[in-house]
Amino acid sequence: MSEPTRYYPAGDGVVRTDPKGPLINHYYYEELKAEVERLKEQDRSQTESHRINTAMWKDQVGCLLVEVDDVNKENASLKAEVKQLRAELADAQESNHIINEIIATMRKEGKQ
Image 1 (cartoon, rainbow, N blue to C red):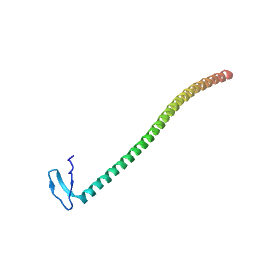
Image 2 (image 1 turned 180 degrees about the vertical axis):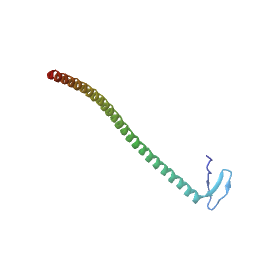
Image 3 (image 1 turned 60 degrees about the vertical axis):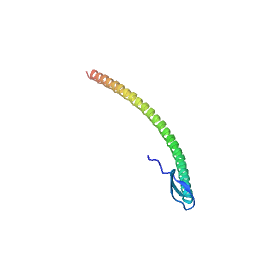
Image 4 (image 1 turned 90 degrees about the vertical axis):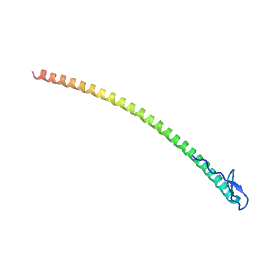
């Protein structure tokens, strides 16, 4: 970034160059100083607003991360429950198959 031009105040209506840099009328110099202060204040307020917004978004992200963690835990719990239910279903189907074989055998023996 290049160094900005520095202006120094001169007497009323005097605009000339000086070894220290360009000179400018006091009236315009005061206007420039006021503009610089306005811009500094604007930057401070935007910086504060940015800080507040950043903090708010960090809080929201933190809350969402907690929710995601809770959902992941619930998902793991549900997967374990599904696995257990599938195992129980397989056992019940095996038991049902054995019972059906016993019933079939008993019917055969009863018919003979």
